[in-house]
Image (cartoon, rainbow, N blue to C red):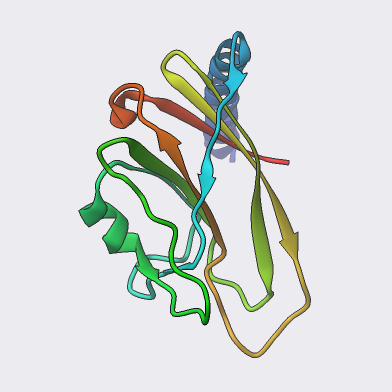
Length: 156
């Protein structure tokens, strides 16, 4: 029993250290961060062959990787948002599959050198008979290699 308590204490300390580091990094990223224009990606769906058991935070800089997660949705009168992969990249948040209608709405995107802060809001409805994978995706203008950016996803 004593060994178990010791192990749990070590784990708790390690987790709190990770949280402190993330909080410190976020505070640093917020310094000098400025709102940047973004394009909300509309008329896409999340493919049903991805792992939808846990949230996924994505930085996508090419069409092939994008197509591994998303497909164009056939909506009457609406075309999928165009993405210019030479000039733009995509950040997206995918939530676990749910049977509650869920809207994920981007609230704000800020950028500072080497960092992007993506704030979003989640609104959930009542249970239904179907399931879906809620997501929000935005296209941002490239200013550097997107894979070198540290992206902070913040639910409001």
